[in-house]
Length: 146
Image (cartoon, rainbow, N blue to C red; front, side, top):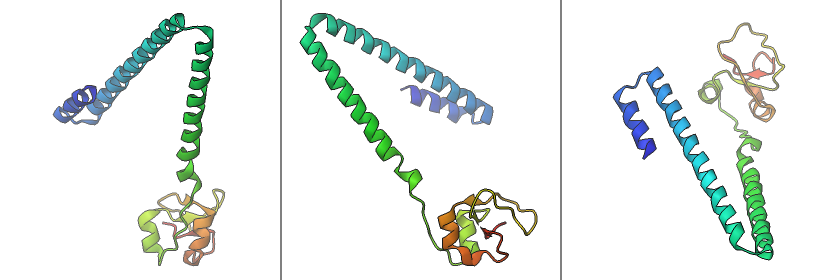
């Protein structure tokens, strides 16, 4: 409901400053909503703790810790798979490579361009550079720089 409310305001006046202010309002309201939910959860747990015995409290704490640690473990293990895997595609020519990487592909971040001033900064990936080494005509360790 709150999201629909913010979208209606953005549709009325879509200037950049207005959109930024509406996004800020949405974030503040969402943060307040989450904070309220956490407070209700704390009150609920305190009331629940008062009505159960020590053995049930220990079981509930143990189950909560197991649940929380498994959620964190799954989030960390599955959330980082995209950043570790690098695509090593061999492109036909520089035109094809520059469609994806405008500044070309560099072997390392410390490599300097020999050909002069370039318009775009190259993407740094040793594996991708090695796959497209044939496109580096001036042998400066940057393939297809623009």
